Length: 322
Image (cartoon, rainbow, N blue to C red):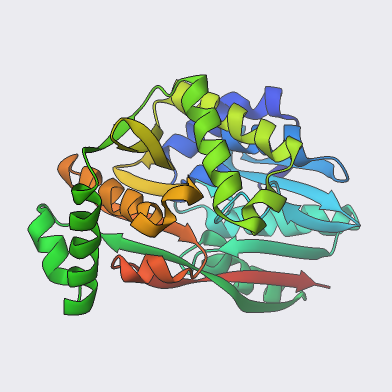
């Protein structure tokens, strides 16, 4: 019979990484490295409830959880983690959730608020049946969307997939930028501190809401996140330059042959040249050239994501109470 063992990041990191590397539910935002960083910067106000579910001394899943106001939540938050889930050995989902809900009930924790969840998440596919069997009440609701698209092998195929107006506008913007001088878009895996600071400046200056979001703690998180991602080999910082001057930046991750556009920013002095949207278009071009299979704009329904060919996928919150 499976049992739940509470632990901490240091003790669980090896087994977490092992099961994460072979799990079907291998989300970047629920990886051990990302979760540890989030907890370091934003865990204040929560109590760690990180657990391994064991069966016959073998780990069958990791429950990256925290307790906030007696409510169980994932380690992470939807302002910096675009989708989250449990990390479970394929085929052991029912055993995992049976053990976990029994454990949480025994701890007096009978309220779970789990989000953001992809439609195919283990939580939405398996937890409702287990919760019902154990007498829990469960509701789920759509809370947002994530926007993504499959990348073709050629840029021409991508452009042909846009509608006529979209294609005309993006090519017109590219021509107009070319008329202003020499343009260059580079994407690097080993960003310098100066490049990260340029991204943060553009991020802050491009929109008022981004400026408010970028507190000192969030800036420290971004810097350490970039350093961690670089060590993991997944960081991709894009920089658009006009006549040798940086004008826009993209902050991406290359993960499982997908590109995640985590965030972006631009110099507002060049807004009239549409450098924000063009930096994302050039990022898509580079991703196609690199042979990536999917481009993920991540959470949020901003118009530019659809303008560039993205399709929305719903994100859910699952609430369980006894």
